[in-house]
Length: 404
Image 1: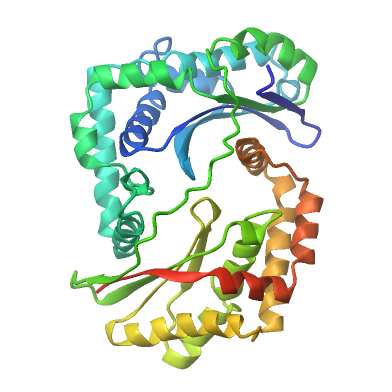
Image 2: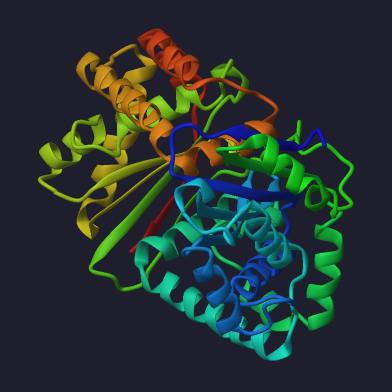
């Protein structure tokens, strides 16, 4: 199958296998997929109690199973990942690739949609939602995204499931979703010591799904229906949450769309040496953190911080002033160089983290653009001050929200 990638593992004592399905992002899809992930993490048809599935994974020398949906632009990637100790590391004739794959694909392909377990999973998700909204920064982020995508409701629930949809989901809804899911575009990724043996054993498992379409999504980036806003809500918190969203020209930051905005996010925030952290601390006397989140698939650079309520106007002026300075060509060379070096250090560490390599492979297959770690580092090194200035010129403040 063209959508199966099994790479040679010469570095780690652990192997990994992942199964990834792409489907459209809608509030109902993200809610059902989150609920399904919770259910499948507990049990399956073959391992039909929580205890049995847990024991089965423990028998694989505590193999680690992760099931979760992840939003990428206008798509959801439903991710199933299993990390396991390589059989060659264990002197156990009953522990082999066949047992590992049989366990993994039984859990993935044969979910048990049981009413009691579904209700338990719903209860868990409701508890997670309550915990999420107890944090003011999460409440502020959720409201910001609803405003940012005011005219595009499919993309509003990017960080929490819809409680109303969750309550209304029936067993039939979940069962119908599973049938559709297993026909959606699929990628299987593995990293193992013996690729020939793994492929030979895995061939029958790789073909159990009915997916025919390519995993790549050439229309991944969301074209936002822009509706600017500057709003606030009074929630009686001691500290105000300030969020400012900048929409930028996605094409302007090619050839790798995320390089420029990612460097921008580190230059402006996220570290104590960043421009905004120093300015907020020095000019306002505040010690609160400032972070910047780049979502290239939504062409959004989101800056957020928590400050005293009487400092909201000042911190907004500082944030806007930093972007205005960039547009005018005023760049702090030391902060710029430091932000690039931090990113280079991060990418150098990718090769030491198996999960990061898996995520990189899936993301690149989703966007249809591939690059080695050395090439990615070269792109960062080659990114210039003028590139940053030109990117800043394409950025527009399209959304501002304060939770007071």
